[in-house]
Image (cartoon, rainbow over all chains, first blue to last red; front, side, top):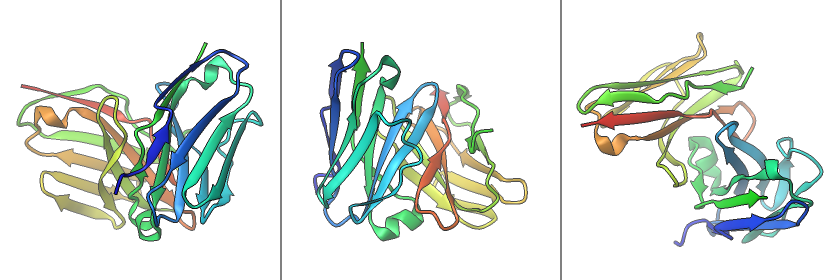
Length: 116
Length: 111
């Protein structure tokens, strides 16, 4: 299996621009998670989906952030408009049902976002 | 108060020593506890999970859980330079299928 695939790996943009991060989970995994990691705040959960349905978006920082999962093999995280404080590494992770219980999340390689 | 707290480190230990990493959590309803390892520039990977009070051993790693004290620890015996990484503690609250991570402790094992 190819693992969780994220794109782009690196994104540099200017403040005010729209940013779209993409994720392809592992086939057959029921859960998909979006995390954000910074030195100051560590690894924060933004939102997670179960069977393509958003379950908990309480970690989404504000209305500028939105996430969708139109089908089982694709999810997007969009930031519009972007701000310098959004600079971080954004991880997507997926998990089968059993994995959620054992805590085994399969992380992608991350998308490093820099907003100038 | 953060939900999951860890000392950011760095924790520096000599090769061959025992490294002790600690984590406290605030939600008494938490039922499952996890340790992830993250090498610099890489994504986190699961090392161990523990559900019950006491110790759980896996090779050179031992996880310890004390629910009364809301405390989880990870011991790494015979530390190797390849163990140098950031160790993330994660907690899963009862009834929720999401992991809450601490900020991580950076471990440096020097030869």
